[in-house]
Image 1 (tube, rainbow, N blue to C red):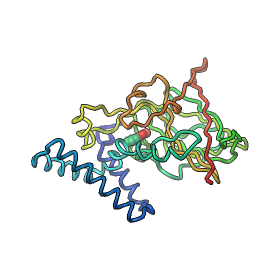
Image 2 (image 1 turned 120 degrees about the vertical axis):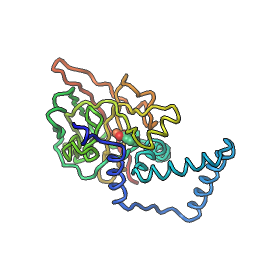
Image 3 (image 1 turned 180 degrees about the vertical axis):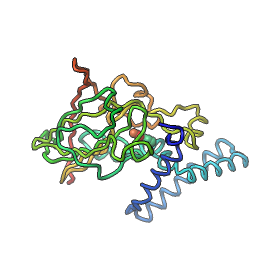
Image 4 (image 1 turned 135 degrees about the vertical axis):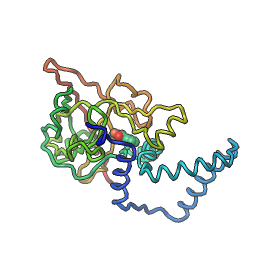
Length: 281
Ligand code: BEZ
Ligand code: FE
């Protein structure tokens, strides 16, 4: 990679913002509920200002920072790091199957379909790194296999870059939609991901530094697992003992989502995982 094509916060942020705004999302929030949420949100912010006796100079710095986050296209990044985990926690209250986790800003729909036993699309340099054979089954809550379920998998490369958010990577690098066999089974060979540093060269980075925080997420796989008649599950899987598993900047780890891969004599790391999907009612 050269200095000119190295991804930046504003480069990946702009791509994430463009992808998000293209969706034109909506929610069926009743007006009374919306009013109550808006009132409490403003109340909480005003309380912080009064409690900390925020000055005019500080208020103006806040205004500038908010403008910078928007202009840098960093709202998806900032919100998914610091806020999404609470929204996911609310969703998790109504689910019994496999635990969910945040989606983050780097999901892209319609990744190419791959058979139940497959190797993820990856560059030669990704193939030269440590490889993971990730296998298992998609089931209902009673453990019955769900044939034809979809396992959408995406993750960063060993340098922490996601395809379509870093200009030097092939379009679908380390992204795929795996279709399970008749028993709901899958076996996917992919590059073992590394810890991921969220971009720090923009206003989100300034915010982290201001809190004396760190910008790291533990190595992770992102997944959306779905099957007709079931609630899809959006989740992430982590690696036991990995750096930052106990101190994720995005607060998105859960004990049930930690894998224990074993390295075989052939050099491959192997691990199994079962996804249990809730009925859609
Ligand atoms: C992620 O890749 O998991 C992620 C990136 C930025 C914000 C939140 C999550
Ligand atoms: Fe990620």
